[in-house]
Length: 112
View 1 (cartoon, rainbow, N blue to C red):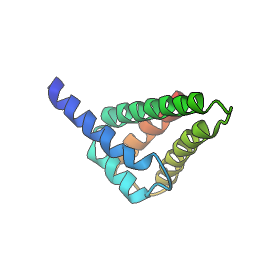
View 2 (view 1 turned 60 degrees about the vertical axis):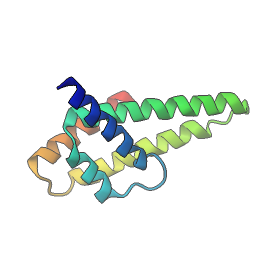
View 3 (view 1 turned 180 degrees about the horizontal axis):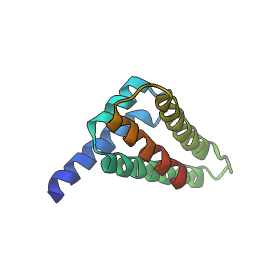
View 4 (view 1 turned 120 degrees about the vertical axis):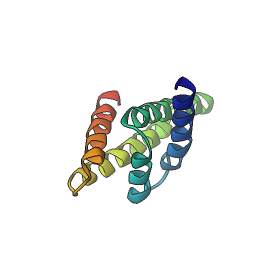
């Protein structure tokens, strides 16, 4: 069980990377949400967010120009995710997806 969950989590983290930069395609994001259990979604987002923050801090340190742009890009990615989740809640959703969106939205807001 532990190995299976680890593999699923690794897959989810790999697949969420497509949503780190640029405009997020809502349909693709919902498809990603539907592919995994709520706990996996939350963990994958937390791992992705932590990696993004670490990368941003390393970029800022290496440039040493006091630019906050790398962190701003991470913030924009989180905001895009929250906008998709907020828009999705306003639409008709299957009960399981609605619950996942609610849990995921709450976890993002409390984490960042």
